[in-house]
Amino acid sequence: MASLPTGRLGEVDPTSDRAVFRQIADQLREAIERGRFSEGEKLPSEAELVEHYGVSRMTVRNSFSILQGEGLVHAEHGKGVFVRPRPPVRRLASDRFARRHREQGKSAFLVEADAAGSHPQVDGLEVKEEKTSQDISTRLGSARKVLARRRRYLLDGRPVEFATSYLPLDIARGTQIAEPNPGPGGIYARLEELGHRLDHFDEEIRARMPSPAEVKTLRLAPGVPVIHLIRTAYDTEGRAVEVCDTVMAADAYVLSYQLPAN
Amino acid sequence: MASLPTGRLGEVDPTSDRAVFRQIADQLREAIERGRFSEGEKLPSEAELVEHYGVSRMTVRNSFSILQGEGLVHAEHGKGVFVRPRPPVRRLASDRFARRHREQGKSAFLVEADAAGSHPQVDGLEVKEEKTSQDISTRLGSARKVLARRRRYLLDGRPVEFATSYLPLDIARGTQIAEPNPGPGGIYARLEELGHRLDHFDEEIRARMPSPAEVKTLRLAPGVPVIHLIRTAYDTEGRAVEVCDTVMAADAYVLSYQLPAN
DNA sequence: CTCCTTTAGATATCTAGACGAGTGGGTGAG
DNA sequence: CTCACCCACTCGTCTAGATATCTAAAGGAG
Image (tube, rainbow over the protein chains, first blue to last red):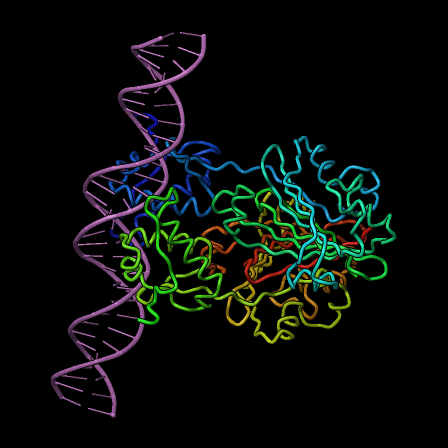
């Protein structure tokens, strides 16, 4: 009797104007946020909650679906509903593309991840010439046909980011940038070797819910948004030499920028 | 017969391994994305879809709840389910706190919004001394007791952002910063007048689903994430003089940063 | 010891229906 | 003509099942 699975929960008031399934979701949410259920812990089963609250199973499931939508819990078929653990986040500093880092040799992603003690992987590499969207070609200020480099990044086996770089053909065609492995320091190092000294980057950040395709590629849990970052690299002559379109699992990232005050 | 409300939809395959309610959601999502239902347009009613697909009403409702979770549609009790219009976004440039803007007089938010032809409002202003979280006081590098300035921003009547500024008491107490109206140029102008010349800002960006309280404050539709931005302002002596914690409706914002390459 | 089957318990999906409540149009009384 | 009321249509909530599928553990066959 001492610690029934539902012992940490109260009752619902069927006469309240708040729907019963919302009341149940409220109680579970609060219990989770107060730590009465800890990360990874199994919540009471549907049947137990049916018993505890005296409601039908659909009502309990409605409550769970709210919490799943909020990304607080995830259901595992045949096992139960669990409090979703918060994954460790990756910090992206605004100096991550500074020349001094590039000169080390390895790519920013691999260096960073190693330093953080994670196991990094790069995946699904695809390099090809293709026609881009109007938006990308406007940003590049070049023709619709470009070189596209697509890849997925994983940390400890978990996909965290999916990125596509677009480069003008007159710059990239026939260079190492058009190879699957762009060499030490990545494509920015190659661009500088080719005489395109980088001056600055513009980054545009949005957050939104993922498309079904993005859910699949990044193996996103329900209720996890994505950060959509579009970076344009400019050389010292003011020409856009690369546009990188990145979709990140929002629960895996914190972006960090430093702005001057003047 | 020519344009039944369901005429733009196909059929479902009950023997498929894809659940029927997902198939229906897929069809509706695709129809919306292809523009076969335009912004603000009413989708077929639950009863019409029950009829069209030959499924039960709960199944149709499950489909709708998926699309609502994705933020694609919203239901209005007694009226129907509608394609959610995409609101116009507000761009935040990385130079928005540059001194030259501050010297104009009006606050950044009001100037910007006026320029964009929107009607800006500031709301729910609250200024008080309070104990902060461990996190904020660590960022400020000061005692737990601080001055907190809380306010909500609206564009054309729609709440888009909720922000709290925290300032050390030894700087802010007794100054105009502790007044509801901080005067021309905002609190950054006052800080500089008080001898804290600003050097730079650090901004940390996360994206996540909102808490129920945030949904209420920002009147967020289901499926809209928030951008959580924490800005720390440093003076030329390296002291943190303000921490601003901002929660923004992600569908109302694009953040924009410029990074140097060296 | 390994592999397969069984079984209990869990979630996933679906059906059929009931009642509640908001919206908006039509209609009849005045 | 106006307005109160009714009614059809809409989504919101809840019940009470049925069937399917997945997981994990136990037990038996080889």
